[in-house]
Image (cartoon, rainbow, N blue to C red):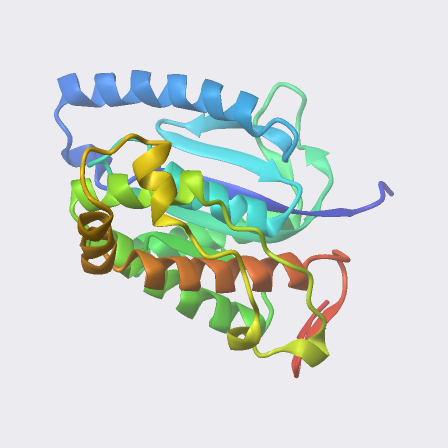
Length: 249
């Protein structure tokens, strides 16, 4: 039997796509195809299986690491604003394609991503993670809290948040089970100066600070960092990792 490898699958599609008129749907589909081409190039070192269309506007792919898949999911949400997406992430083994001529993949990573994707639709959530372990409950609470902030932001605030994270990427650190809980973890704090200098936003630092506060971007960053740290460390040896009394096997 082929040796099993552990990765993170992603399955996503457009929310309420059937409610979009045909003309706009074709345009969105074409835009989405171009975005996928761009992301496959941008994330080529992080992907095991390229992002592809599996059915209609449904997209799937396989990432080497869970935290990279999650950060991609956060970025992917902002690809076609105001279009909304439903995204399922699944951590588990992977055997390869079911058939060389098909996009169907074998492994619990894809199966679990499918379950997460269905849950996102059923419970009206943006992103859901599934590894079939106890820690999923904690991870999904944090993911949901961050996604609620994102959902409540205006388009302008979403664009500011996207620029903020682009210029101030998260740099998660390795932790062991004895250094938890997550609130003691230090991560790089975003600089508002980058927004002014590099993005050349024509406003004052005080105004940027007020906009960041109104958009709850610092809270969004803390939640996203917590998710990244959990995902990075719970899957770092792929098969078994302890976080307090939460065990991943």
